[in-house]
Length: 443
Image 1 (tube, rainbow, N blue to C red):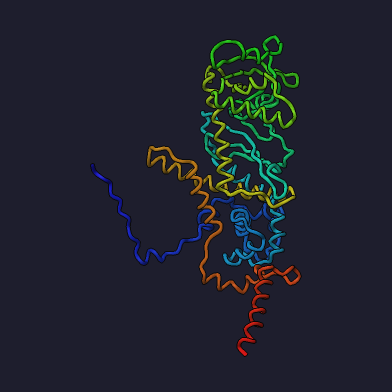
Image 2: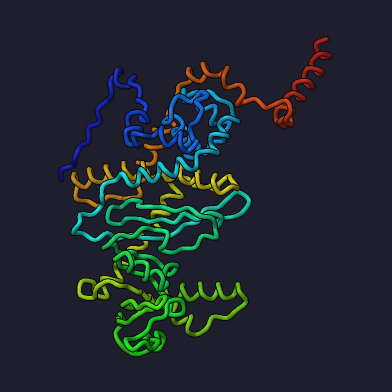
């Protein structure tokens, strides 16, 4: 049996001494809009220079602040070493407070600059959902990121940031004719159907009979519970209407039983939720927990019941995107209390995410052309994000650190007005005590 041999070329001495070029100016800056400085000055993000050379340097500092999880002091030291700016900690704090509107404009510009994902003859599938972000001292449901994921192109389409009072609904997004909106039961209401119908789009929503009632052709309420209890095929379909603000919309109801293990877990979740409220789940609630009930406006000829169910199950891809976003981007609890600061932090993270998606799309296309094997989205995302992080944060040598040490004094030393650090106090006490003991012995 022949064994393929792999020969690794040993780098020469000249190749090992080649310095890695800074990827910020060569890779990241060309992707930014050309008129970056005009809106930065108009939105008060870059009014006075004060040591910052340009708008791109300011953006690099903002991205490094969130990607490296810097404090304002460590950000100031990083900026001195990388020759980005030489300003104080207070100056950086003021600039970080004024970044929100400009970062929102930049995020929108990066998303709209992408080419249209599907050709005009193809249908665009958009997965809509929201994820929660926490805040230091307040838990994990303080801020919400409403995400519109273009499954056809495999990238972020639009995003909206709200606090925990911001509910999930389709009115937050601009729908286009021919779009297929796939969402969970948080969007399974009649107003979602009406909003999509006004935009000439279609929906595939997980629904509940109590929150999204339907009716037959004569206008009589349709009993979904009795329909599911009737004997028949496992996957069943029904066509009817739903009414919203005096208008009727044709819909289809597709139902399929969940596997026994998933149905049992869903029933247990319903029981835990009812137990927290001091209630007991009804028999209909336990019965509906074992069914997948999907409401759709897609045409039955082009989209049979099996195709609708498979399209809805693709909604899990947006959950995987959230997992990659929080784990690979290292999203922690936000260190802010104001709405504008939280929005600015999340928008800076999403700008880095969009830059990562551009690189990931390029890598995925190249790998798909070279091989027929499936490409791991997780590994591609991890490599792309680390590349973007390296381009933003940069690198330096020990010689550069020693050279900048006199200017780093204000970032590393505590103010005399602040309480003395315990470690510094303990070392001074030990040194004084050691000298007092050594002097008598020497005498």
